[in-house]
Image 1: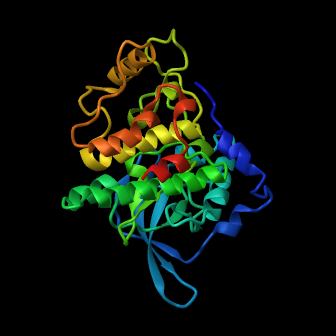
Image 2: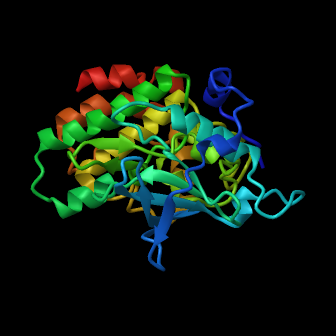
Image 3: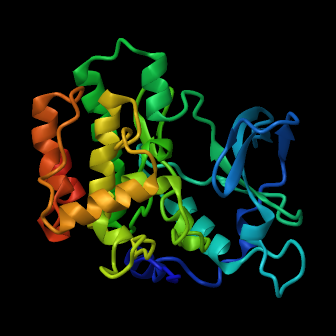
Length: 306
């Protein structure tokens, strides 16, 4: 098992005053709605909430509730928010870009599992949005792709590595634009160890999943990087046409590891173009999938191609 702190987080930490108390981000006027969550993730559940605003109105928000085992340290009292969550909120609260989700604040920090308060994106993620709107043109999908890349380029300019770019983390706002969420979330709360099977493996490049050539199962995992973010973004963009996860024809994650190892060893050619993806789009994305991370374009360079 590898303990991971991304280089992007290290680069960013000097910009975030360590002394800011977590209470500074607590918003007391938030009430959870309903008895069932609206979405379930690997580490958190998403609920609807109602937040009172300073002008006397209200705003429907999304409440992301971290599970108890993630936000508590075994050696500390029940309900103790760990250092990783504090760092995550401090970074995510400062983000200011139309294509990146900003954390509004926290609620219920004295409860066993507090809530991150987020804007509600009722369109859901990009794949759900495109399935519900099958008439979207190639040009409209390219605009979604540009939104993902604009958000990623913004993060990289700040020295922040996203660490988990995939379709579930690319939402669609009310104007129909793509918005990246959960930047640095897994690494900062200590859940970026994928030494056990994870659905996120399908988007990861070989250098993150195969760091020990002698390992049979390829379960060792390396730290996120800007180059890995670009690889993951390219596969996410391809999904806008396929509407399926990458390598959908493979039976399981271990088949993926075998294929990535064969690519690395030169036993397979480069990844094939999915038939649904236009040739022009695939040409733009191809070198993002290079086996050599340094050969991949930056997010800024990739955005400029579109």
